Amino acid sequence: MDSENLINRIKPIVEGLVFTSGEDGLSLIQIQSVLECTRDEIGRVLELLRQDYLDEQKGIELVKYGGRWKFVTKESVYPYASRLYAKAQNNTLSAAAMEVLSLVAYRQPITRVEIDDIRGVSSEMMLKKLQARDLIETCGHKETIGRPLLYQVSARFYDTFGLESLEDLPQTEQKQGPDNLFYQPDFSEVHQEDLTEQNQQEQQDNVQTSQTQEQNQDS
Image 1 (cartoon, rainbow, N blue to C red):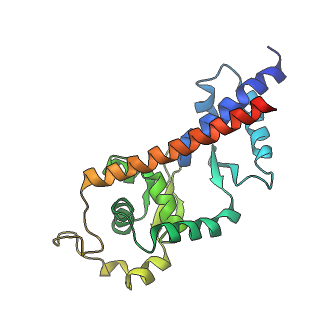
Image 2: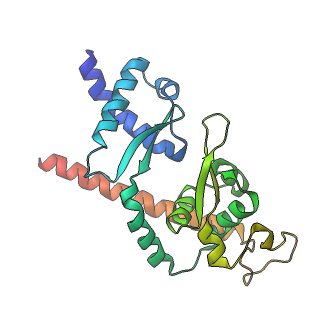
């Protein structure tokens, strides 16, 4: 197989692999481990994809941080995401979002993987929603393999909950209940909510995929 045909064949595969890696991203070595091609060929594919997503018609872009490639939302989308989640949540936080926010507040700076390990379920969607509502923010990278993003609460967090500092947070040994902002929710309900959101996202992705396939067939 000549180089051009190989590039065209693996380009959608590399795109899908990077997309599924989410916030963690993938290194060239990781991508090469599942494809029969050289690093130079993979590097060329990634650069072609990066150029594709520079198009102003795209809402996401392909970036390289710390030797890892990942898809991120373009800055121009954030104001609209903030409006979307503000309307959807109606100034309230779900149990799952509150659990993630509590972990960030009490254990910052903290990575998504560390939050996932504590909760036992993916927190990527909740972190994005909390970021969109400007309750948390990134504060650099953890100096470990992959250099994952670190999260901390934002200035708006303090204003929203009437806190002057983290020392004003309720003590973790206090009895917690639904009337307490930082209560510990029922894990089964929280995780079911996560799964419901993930299923809804998967359904939306499937619909988009079907529509794209139909458009391709029509063309």
